[in-house]
Image 1 (cartoon, helix red, strand yellow):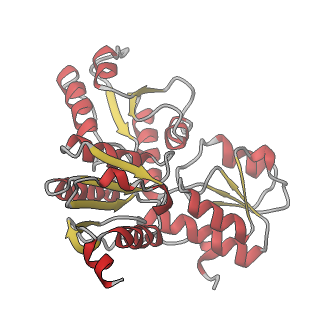
Image 2: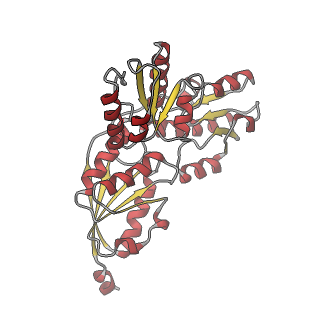
Image 3: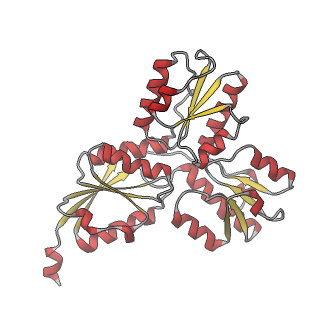
Length: 321
């Protein structure tokens, strides 16, 4: 047995930090947990609270019922709106039905909603940089009347965009985009519309930026990059893209350790490991344990930034134990 243990190849694991849950995800999950504690099961949740299969399955086991539309919720049970935000029509419908609702929209997404409203009130034509169909994009566009926001997904879209008044344009962005891709799109918009109104502070959130920065640092020394996160998680998908762009062709997005194919690590001496902002830390530990079954693992933490952000819970739940 000792001989086989020594025969395992050495593998350096560069553990990117920050990784995993951000403050908005942590708050959203707590809102569902505390709502179940306070009101009992079932508590309905409009859309997946965050885009992670493991989180959703754990909350479902506790008594959360995930639905896509408010029509699927009975009026006499609490409903939580997901961290991605919702169109204005959703809370309006909940009020009309006299429903008890809790808004788990990330405060940094709400900030984008406020910016978009401010630009609209000022009479500006608004560009939203984001991914079509993503619930955050649907929610942000749904803050304003139909047609008030134009979605731009690529630099080519930015080049093709024709505003009514080129001197009266503003842009906002989805919070979970690739920092580099977005910078390219913004550069095109600024070149074409020098007077374009920009966010007071970057819309791409601190957690997205920090996690991408950590991947770039890890990628400098990695042969392979493993990103823990679900395929419908925008920020997780971006982390794998950032790895590939940084030169790690073997960058993989996996739900958990069971999805790891050891053949991906053929010839690798160093593997970078990170997790999207909606992926729990237990998945990271599970992956390291899986790697340790096949390799002599040495773990090194890569610190790109320190995070000390937290968001308050809604007043209705702040006192729940």
